[in-house]
Image (cartoon, rainbow over the protein chains, first blue to last red):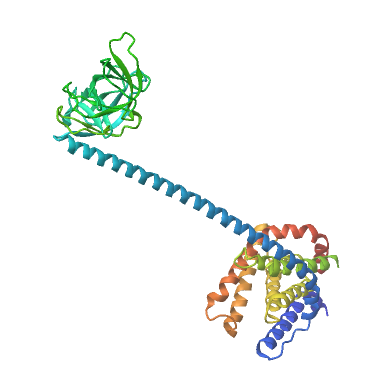
Length: 281
Length: 169
C-alpha cells in the first residue's frame, strides 16, 4: 500500500495510458465507435463553442471585408499608376507626333527653298526680356555663320548674330533691334518691318498713298540680300494714320509664335527666288 | 478544486479557441495546439494522479471536439504528461529555459506519436508530408505561445497547484 501511495502518479499514468490505448485500439480496429465521455464533453463545450462560433463568423466576415478592402485599395493604386503611365505615354506620343509634323513642314520648306539649308534645334530662349534671342544646337562646325537667315515652318525667325563651333545665337525678329525689308503681299507696298516690345511688329515707312487693309499678309521682299523673297512675316492687325503726312505705319501680328520655337532652318545663302511660304491671300 | 475548475475552464476555452476561433479565421496555416501547452503546464505544476487525470481528460476533450478517433489525443496527452513528469522530477524546472526545453520535447513527442499512429494505420494521407506538415506547424506555434502562456497561467493556478505538489511529496 505504501509503494502504491509512493508511486501513485506512475500507477495512475500507466493506468490512464492503458485505458486510452485500449480506447484507441477499439476505435481504430472496431466498427463501433466507443466514446463514453464524448456526449458529456460535447455538451460542456457546445455553449462556449456556439458563442465562439458566432464571434468567429463575425470576426471572419470583418477580416475578409478588411482583406477585400485592402485588395481594392491596392488595385485602385495600381490602376492609378497605370493611368499615369498611359497618360505619360500619350503625352510622349503626342509630342512625337507634333515634332514629326513640324519636321515634315520644315522638310517641305527646305525642299521649297532649295540649296542645303541647315536644320537646327532651338535649345534655349534668351533669359532677358529686353533682348529677344534664341540659341541653336548648330554652329560653325555645321556651316552656320553670322548673318545667316533663320526660318521656321511658319515664317521668318531672325538672323544669326553669334556663333561657336557647336552652337549659335539668333536675334529674333521680335527684338526691337531687328529689321527686315517687307512688302504687303496684296498691294506690293514696301516698307521696313521692325520688332516691337509689345509682341507685334511695326511696318514703317510706307508711302501715304499705298492702300493697306487689316488682315493683309506681309512677306519678305528679298531686297535685303538676307532673307529669301516671299517668306511670311505676319498679318496687319492695326493701321496708324501718318502723323506728319509722310509715311503710314501698320502693326503686324507675327506669323511665327516665338514662344513655341522648336526646330528651324538656317539658310546657307540668301535666295532671291524662293517659293513664298505661308501668308498667301 | 479551484485549480481543477480553472484547468477545466482553460481546457474548454483552449479547445474552443483552437477549433473555432483560430481554425476558422484561416489566418494561420494550422491552429496552435493550446491543449498541448496546458498538458505540459499540468505536468510541470501538478505532478499528481489528479494531474495525470487532467491530462487524460484534456486529451479526451480534444478527441471529442476535433479528433476522429476517440483515444488518440487521450493517449498522446497522457504520454506527454508522463514524459514531463519524469523529466521535471530530475531537472530544476524554475528556469524558463528548461521549461521551454521541455516544451520542445513535448512537441516532438506529440508529433512523433501522432505520426507513428498514422503511419501504422495509414488513416490519413498517402505521404508523410500530409500529416507531418500541419502537425509540425501546430506544435511549433504551441512552442511559440508557451513562454507567454505559462506565466499567465501562473497568475491563476500557482497557489493551489503548489500546495498539491507539496502534499504529493
